[in-house]
Image (cartoon, rainbow, N blue to C red; front, side, top):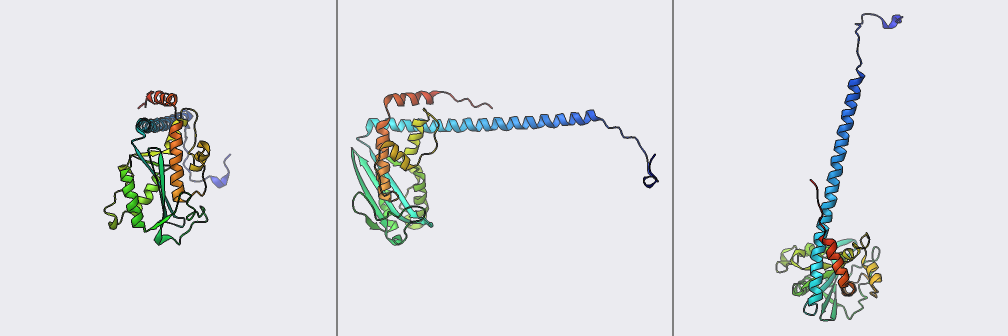
Length: 269
């Protein structure tokens, strides 16, 4: 019996609930979701393989550079450099360090930027501006320091660094103004060899590793250091690290790396 309060001028009709249609619709949604998930998985795998392929190409080029260096090291000029900037305003360059290695001899120079001499780091990195360990520091303007650095870099066969792209970022930002028209120091103009890349190439044939800091590699390769974040010291220690790394790579290791890089990577469509 229908209660009186819900009776009245209602139209009554029969509604057929087709549960089969509902289930079918649910299956279609599930199938579509699975299809999308599989597509995303394939895209992720392709991207991973593409990155692996690109890394292999970078390692192959690096290996060619290392073989050239081993064969012709006495004829080549290597330059490492470091830029220090004020921690609270990265536009203010405070130091430039330059280290030159040629035929077994290494010379290092430390430049303090005169107009920014009052800006000293202390919170994020230690203040070692006045603790150069390889001679006497010299004072120059930013313009003079960039001009000196440009001349040295353009004479080098290889630019050596650890995460050297960061230092080139400082240079490129500083030399954008018109007064630097005579200076061309974009990173793509130079033959660069990065100690981080050498480390990754060597270790990729042994086990997976994360990015290594410069000081951790100093410890690993026995580079004695003090007063880091002095631009002159950092440039010198990076050069010493590079020399030790190259010396540590055996012919057998080169052959192993070559074999590993020769294996094909198939990227499915």
